[in-house]
Every structure is written in structure tokens, then in C-alpha cells.
Image 1 (tube, one colour):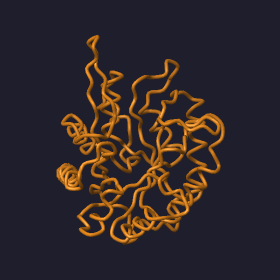
Image 2 (tube, rainbow, N blue to C red):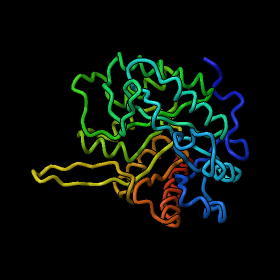
Image 3 (cartoon, rainbow, N blue to C red):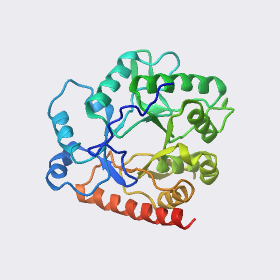
Image 4 (spheres, rainbow, N blue to C red):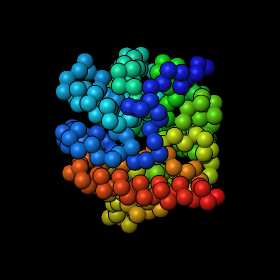
Length: 296
């Protein structure tokens, strides 16, 4: 296994993204971000939006990364697909990482590709020994190509595989232990999945090791009550972070401590000042979490 941190340039000052809050860099906010330079810990972009040859988005990102560390978040590598990774997509991801030199690189514990067909969703994988071995191989291959520690994000779930034999948290923890990858703990996804599938999110946190946690995500979700009396929570990234998710975030901070934290808002994207207010709220939670760590 190579030294995944060798030669790593991570942000404008050469250091890792700080344990503060960032937001997603949306095209509608580029001009304001470049002009105002609000006090954010980092900016995150989806890798697939920057796999082209160039153009205005690339130039804007070059400008913004002079002031902010970057987090590159992939949504299309399909680590959970059966068979080999898509060589072309992995190479394209490698080019994005080489060009923009992000502080953080992440992908999903999911699949979204069959052959040359990509699906517009992140689909669940069975949690069993065979899938774990597949994920270990795919994560190792990705980290070898990128020469980076990859962070793997827990999914939002609506159904589970009946044949799963390993709990999701144990699966993630084992994947991190066997590959050296980190975990991007999406607190909203954890809350959504726990509500939909009926498990204890605090027990999930207890199953993870603090050293593996490299980043947090926070987002809003849609709570829908069904006509037959049930309910479902949908991870839509289209609203403020819900109060129960803030509470779960506090529990994660007590267990793991502060990490770089992203406020995600990908649909019905509001004005920049709304995102900055959510980021400021997350920073307050991070500060309280840091005080808890020092007191402990």
C-alpha cells in the first residue's frame, strides 16, 4: 500500500481542510463567493461537474481555490458495482484531483452503474462478505490511483437487502480498517436511514472508530406521511437541517470530535446568505463539540 498522503497539496496554505464548516460551491454563487470571500472552512464540488476539458466553471474554481481548500465529492464511480471499476471514470476522477489538488476526496457506499449505463441514483448494496471483499478491492484501487485517502459516505436508505449479514456500521468500520480509507459520516443520511429502517443511530455511531471519521455532511430532508399511516424520510438536500439531525450531529461530535463539516443544499438552492447562516450554525455546534473534547 503506498503512502496515500505523499506529496499531498491540500488547500491554499498546504494544510488539511480545518474542522470548520464549508458549503457546496454552486455556479449561482461563484461571483459572490469570489467577491466577498466569506469565512468558510472549505468549498465542496461534485467531481463529475469538472471532468470536462475546461471552461468557465473550471476557471471560477481556480479562482476560489486560491482562498479556500476544496473537497471533491464523487457521485459516479459506483464503488459497489459488480465487476471492475470503470477505468475511464476513475482516470477522469484522477485528472480532477490532480488539477484542483483538493484537501478531501470522497465517494459513496453505493452503486449506480451497470456496464456502460449510469443510473440517476445511488443504490444500496448488500452487506455481506462478498460485497465487502469487492469494496475493499475497489477502494484500494481508487486510493492507489489517486494517491489519496478516500472518504466513503454512508448512504440514505429506504429499503434493505434481505440477504445482508453485516450491519452497515460494522461494514463501514471493517472497510476502513482493511483499506485505510476514512468515513464521511453523513449525519442526515444516518438519521433518514435510522427512521426508515428502524435502527438506533446512536448504536451506529458507537460501532465506528473516531480515527476513521474524516468529514461530516449535514443536509435537510423531506418528511412525508403516507396515506396508509406510515411515513418516510427522503434525503433531498432541499431545506434547512432538521432539529433531530442537529441533535444527532451533537452526539457524533461528543463521540468523534470536530471534523470538516459540509452543509449540503442541492435542490431549491437558496441565496448565499441562507447557506452562510446554516454554516454559522454548524460552526457553533462544532465549537461546542470542541469544548466537550477539551473538557473530557
